[in-house]
Length: 448
Image (cartoon, rainbow, N blue to C red; front, side):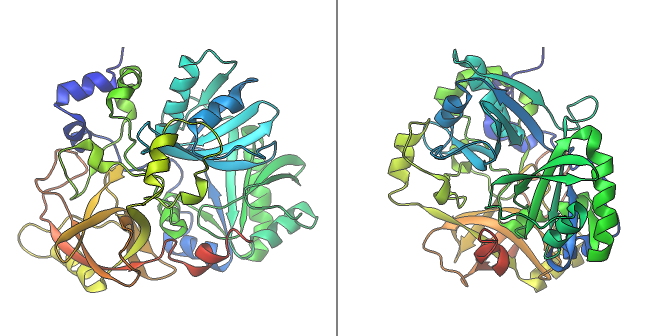
C-alpha cells in the first residue's frame, strides 16, 4: 500500500519540508517537444493558427448520476444556475476557510453526465467527496499519460489564432456557428463527429475539439492538411508550456488541504499525488502559501446563490480582497545578468530555462516593494510574441500597474529537490502589468 499524505507529513516533520524537498517535476507535457521550433510555434497563436494537443497531459474524471450536479455544486464556488448540456465552466473549489484547492474545466456532456478535466489537485478532491457521499454519483478516472496504461478515452485538440475560425470553416465546409464563450457545438471533420468548446488556453480565438481517441489521427491530419493554407503550426511541449503566461492563468497553486478539517482527506490521498514546492518564498507555515479565489483573479467565478464548502469564509474574504493577479515584467538587464552568471567563475544564479523557467510544480518566489513583502510570483518564463521575460504573481491589491517592484530568484537554503542545482539568490527588478499581459487576451477574448 502506498504511503498516505498524512503519514508522509508526519515522516517529514511538516507539510512545508515535505513539499520543498519532494522529487516531483515542474510539469510534464508528454508530447513531442517541438514540431518546428518553439519560437515559431508560440508566434502562431498570435499570427496564424496553432494546433495544440492536450490529449495526454490532463486527467478526465467522468461523473454520472442523478445527484452528480448537486454534489458538484456543493464543492464549487461557481453558480450552477442555467448550467445545462453543451455548456462548460471553470470550476473552482475551496476549503472550509475559503482557500483554493484547485480548478478545472467541467463539461456538461449529457443529462446527468459530466467530464471534469484538470490537474490532480481538484480531481482527487472531487473523487474523495464522491466516495464519501451516499448520493447517486459515480465516477470513472481516465488519468494522464504518466499514470494511465493505454490510450485516453478522448483526444483533445485546441485550435487558436486569428485564422482558427477560417480553418474550421475550411475543414468542415460550413460557416462557423455563433457559439458563446464556454458553450459547445459539434462539427463534422473528415467524416467524424467532433465536439467543440468555444475556448482557448492562450487567450486567442478558437475552439477546443474533442472526441473518441480512435478518431484522433484522422482529425489531426485533416486539420493540418486544411491548415496549410492558413499558416498552421503544430505546438509542442515547450511552446505549450507558455500558454498560462499568455492567458494569465496561474496553473498550480498549493492546494489548501493541510487543515485539521481535512485530515481524513490526507489519510485517503496518496503522498505521490502532491507536487514539489520551490522558490524563494519559504515561510514555515503551509497556510502562508494558500490563495483565495480573489487572489487568483477568480472574482467572477464566485457566486453566493448556493451552499458550498467555504461559502461563509468567502463571504467574509469578499469584503476586502487582499491581493490581485498581475503580470511582472522582468528587467531585461537583470535577466541578462542571471544568464551571464552561468558563464562566470563562482556560484551562478539559479538557471533560467527558456521558454519556461519554473523548476518546481508549485513555484513560489517572494515579491518586494522597498524591501517589504507584497506577494508571491509563480509561473515564470519568456513570451516570444512580446519579447519579455515575465511571471504571473498575486500581490497586494493596492499596488498599481506600472509600479516597480523586486522579486527574489533562487532558494536559500538550497533544497534537496533533484531539479535544484547549487546556486545563489539574486534580486530581479520588475514592473507590475495587467494579467493577461496581451491586450486582446485581456479585453476582447471572451467577447469573441
